[in-house]
Length: 194
Image (cartoon, rainbow, N blue to C red; front, side, top):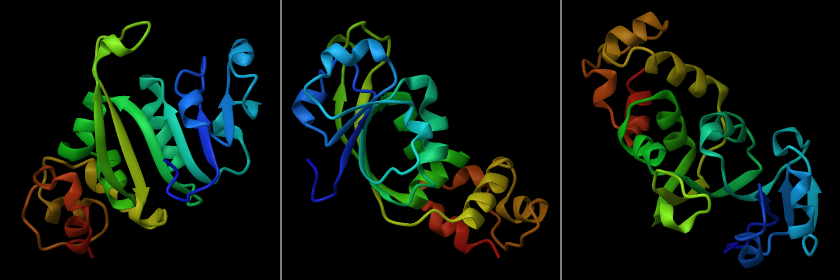
């Protein structure tokens, strides 16, 4: 599981259903009602977003409504080398297929692999959506300039890259529409912007 990346931090351990199989080095849980389920683990009761130093590998089954916000923060933490996450299938589909800011940025920073699809019947309470175990291996450090370029360019998905670049204060000779670039083509997009 760890591929030598330590420590393994699990965020949102809940009742420990995944935790007992993972045996993380540190279990971070926000809900103090879960203490009784996690007493056999190295437990920190805290909001992981506000912990001062996170490094190593994060594992989590994130609440689906915070997924984008989670990525906007964790992507800046260069010491987090690997993420193993259970995510809503629709979100993962967008990472690979939709030309959005977060999709471009995630594909720039990480090598992303889908491991397994989890049906709603595996959860209690049962969600209405499928989930996917997804692994994010960091291949690049966070770059504020790249973030800024992708943030601006992505606002103009229906314009050509030439026009979007001009609106963002850059230049490009590429006449493909921004939405025609797949997220995994982010380097091609960035190399077309000067």
